[in-house]
Image 1 (cartoon, helix red, strand yellow):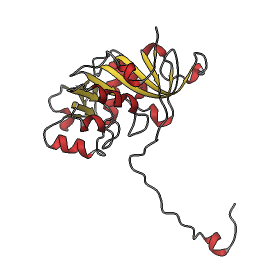
Image 2 (image 1 turned 30 degrees about the horizontal axis):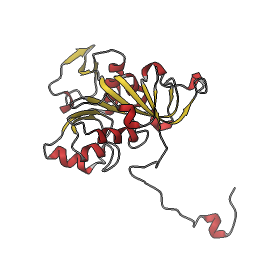
Image 3 (image 1 turned 180 degrees about the vertical axis):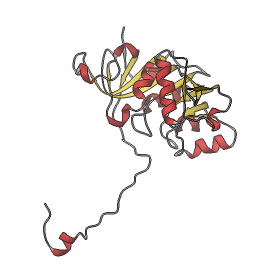
Image 4 (image 1 turned 90 degrees about the vertical axis):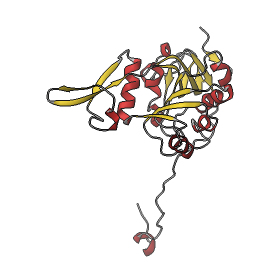
Length: 246
């Protein structure tokens, strides 16, 4: 099976339709499949249910799909960096299914493992549990959460080979590996596309059996949601005394 495609638009050809469920990997703006998201925007599909830890920021990542009103519902954990998201949600234009972050991760993992539902303590007695089945085990209360399985998953990997084996780097391992297992079709954008055998088998995070389509992308700009730095203080005791440091 040919897995490598010439570009993001070609990689998504024939997969997208209105009202589908889409998973998008990454954490904050790290490891997001931004070029594949742009291809979704260009396709014009609408009514999407998007599963993602967060919703990007205004004009970046999933923020692009919010601006074009292509998203009907978000299943997310943290969405506090997107003003357009907040505006649409508060205005009743966007549905949201909030999840504790660990619960969202487990719902995706469960979907990929063929587990339809599971019980967790997290969220019991809060709004998270409203309308859901609850049960007591060994004197402790739990809430039932359903697994998630999407029509298409979009993931970003640092390195991938032409057979679809993927390796993620650092924070990009959040959500990308589990989402790659939890969809009917997984499409990966990779920064470095190599030949089979060039990735050490012990460092492969997603086996190629889960990946149907691959596209090589340029690394582009590595964005940070909020840059927080400590004010530099050059007036250290050693500097003030004219001495050196070791």
